[in-house]
Image 1 (cartoon, helix red, strand yellow):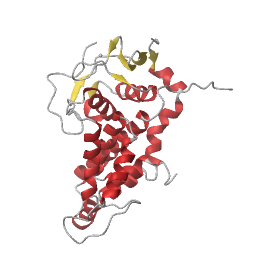
Image 2: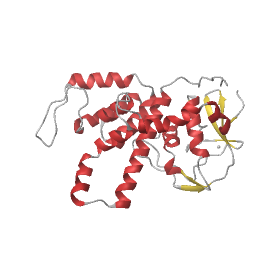
Image 3: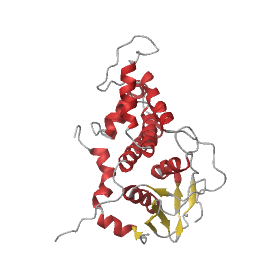
Image 4: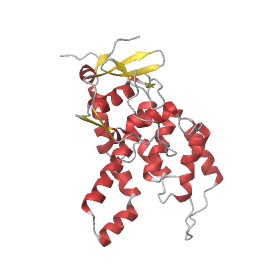
Length: 271
């Protein structure tokens, strides 16, 4: 078992991961022994837990360590746990660093609703809705029936309110593609699909053919039209836009970090 690694040291060793979140937002086109979750677990929506809102920060330092089941998050000398009191263990070092950064960035108050990576990990570990891989894939693919964005697959046009008919072969190809992802990554994909209400925009985003801003804008075309016609409710619409971007970016980052090798390659910094 590896000793805990201080978060500040980790970021000096891995500067590229620190910048990756920003990269998702501006990438050019194509190119604890105690659970910190108070009270009983709430009934979650289909895609993830509903985290508690806020709690006073009770720890000073955040670090990660490698255990038998993967990488763990340490809040001072306590191990982070899930809402179901399972040890919070993630499959890759990069994901552990990203989650640790969420906890380390909290100020006097822990704002759980801003910690999307932690919530996605909790959902993957506890699986509160007890869905298997096939169910996750079906939940994502069903958005094809109401998807208003075309992205490089065969979909006919329609003038009906029911939308076009999706060819069986298209569904089979997409299902086969999604089957290549592991369960953790599929949790992230289904999360992003639910945010954008589009399987196709999610594919473009994960394949790095769209930036977060582009994908979010395309998912909000109808809303943007209504705003241009009737005006903008500044605090409401602006907040909703930024929240959607944050959730979408977090979900996309989660997919990539769950699809990479378990450890971050250490590179010596040369003078």
